[in-house]
Image (tube, rainbow, N blue to C red; front, top):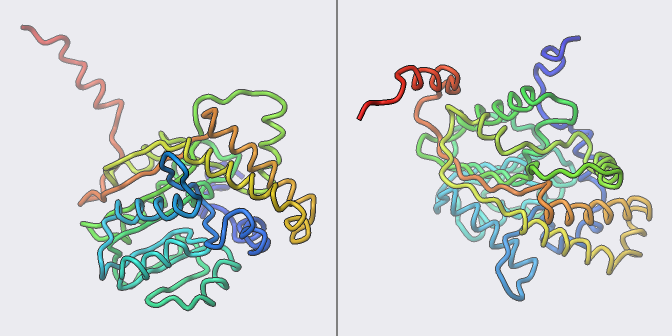
Length: 316
């Protein structure tokens, strides 16, 4: 089977792989993520900041960058345990917040919360069909799951473009979209220990492969303008360090909940993340997008670059 046919119709991470990672134990995740079960990088300030305050700041940043207002309809792609959904309905008074996820545990958890004006679906974004376009779309660390290891760079970009095409259709012309995602950096040191840690990470995060920022820019070309872009890898390093510290402090309880081997694998994986984001072989990007009024084909770079060069040097 050719690569083209093998990747045709690819929808990102399978539901089985997503559930293998996320449907472990709510109580285990609560040990290190805190009571809000916020499984993403926070946004820190200097000084004695707390994890809970930094997570609330991150969520507020993403929601406000998406220009959410009272009465808005908002889609959360990869909603997890619903921290953003709760914030949207409780603090921003949206008319409707829709969350989609591949985690049964997340859906069950949110259904028990019975949040007003909130709908949660066990669904892939590719299959989502809104009743009417959304005013805003938010996606927090879901894009890492849109391409599996082993895909070529071209296939990865094709997968990300599917995401941007779907979001362009689901978003109002004056809407906004914010995306927070882990990305590969450009300081990747190859040694046995790092490769071993990355191999372990593939068992904790099956079918997961972060994008390069350049792949995202290529994939959204002709569909969205990038209004703002932040590289906050130091924020992820600090978040992961907090997670590691909490796991170590309650190591025995974690082992009781999911088994010692798996608990230690999570702890080692989080420790590797601290090093990865500190040294820059992983980064964290926060994007703010605005849809283009008309969908365009990606720019023909070869044509543009060479046409501009044909005239030679202008005479003064």
